[in-house]
Image (tube, rainbow, N blue to C red; front, side):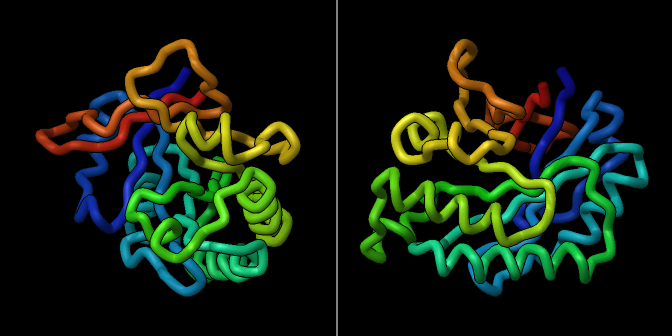
Length: 187
């Protein structure tokens, strides 16, 4: 097991040496979101993590309501990564949740068939090593992840015996150098 964190521009400027000194070995960096959104700190975060010897993967926050939307999101994500010119040692994850209620507020069909089809469209069209990020509830009830045949990054804070998959986000309160991060374990 290896310890990691995930970051986005919402974390501001990260002290990568403090992260490495805390025993963190990898980081998942948000690259993009939706059909056109780009995380303005993506390249800086990847370069900073690499500079202190961390392995890096990426994630894309999905707003897709249909598989066609997910194809556009995959193209956006891939373009951001390619334009940054960075190497990724870990997969690119499709963050399939609805934390800001965008999907719910836009009439999202949250059936397992539609959600799984959206994930499949993203995975099939990005052309990179990929996986799916979601809460345990979404993995158990909305995403047929077994059929997708990809890595799974499970967000289940405080759980210890449930599905952990490839990677497990176990907390949103990992304090490093006085700052909060999401804590992850890579199996």
